[in-house]
Image (tube, rainbow, N blue to C red):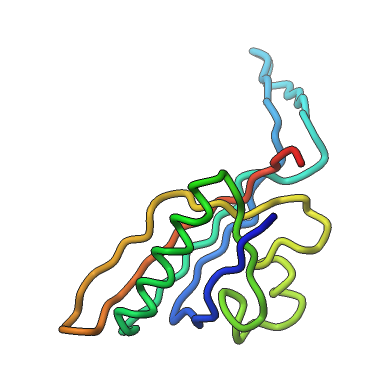
Length: 133
């Protein structure tokens, strides 16, 4: 059962669509052979930046991280958080809901930087994984 990310709009985001799992072999004469191990992308990446949010919002993100990782779960996003402000076509990639089969997991713990009392900047990095259901 997926865990919804807190309803906090990012101030920045970076997305990489991942790659298809494959191995390339090149002969001495330059001929190339490719063995593909599946028809779905893997290892997509999403990095979200939240600048100058309240410490209470930072706590919501940290609590989400703990909740997701304590039971090996995944994160879901809506148009009101990670995908806020993107077109509907781009939102489906950012949310990985277009039939990719990928599920967002935290790639690392959120990084929290205190800016001033009560205000923080948070950076979250996610990786899209094909996880058996």
